[in-house]
Length: 306
Image (spheres, rainbow, N blue to C red):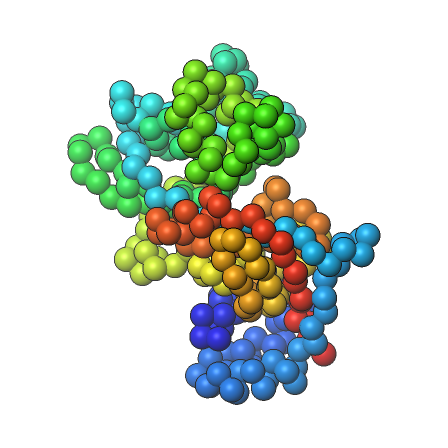
């Protein structure tokens, strides 16, 4: 309950109209014991089971994390793939250039020249960071000093997201489309990595943020505009679940058993429909491993003010 309440307090920094009236009580109860919190939730909230428009109450749970990767401010032989800020002419072309266009068309490359934030080791690392939507970079500066910075989501090229794992399955190239399975296929087929990466035309652009000592222990800001809490924040379809909604999440499968209170604080281009969630695991190696493997059945109940 303590972890969930911490996430709820984050949501109360930018509450929506439905839950704003409860935030004073949520803050007061942060000093209360677990029994007080449970009693308050039972009296003030009504659970509603989520179903799809067709009446299905079981959907899909996946997970995402905040990668921690090495990077360089300057292009080097070891770090050669750029991560970009928003291009200046993004609004003039909808949708903007695809991933393949950016790699091959002089016009797209000219629009991004000078917009490089940093360089990572390869296109696979860049793709993973863009799928996750944020990252921590252990960044080597031009004079050789290193520091940790955060990359936050700034926008996209408005192209559709297409799963590279789905493409591999459809081609009959893998049976395991988890991220470890995808990475294993890439290691075995280095000559086809570029082909694979180009199957996802969507590109995410970032903005750089300083990472203070206090911010090392909190997650990136999600679409609600508040810091995400590992194990307690989920990305949802905001047309089905408003940001800031407390949600009871149940998912049982080979990777993990979840039966817990979470907060709807983020979204993603692949998260559509009512019974669909992406579970934020954090930024550790274990978080990355779980995020890469988690894909199992899901049931959700929103907890709505009475």
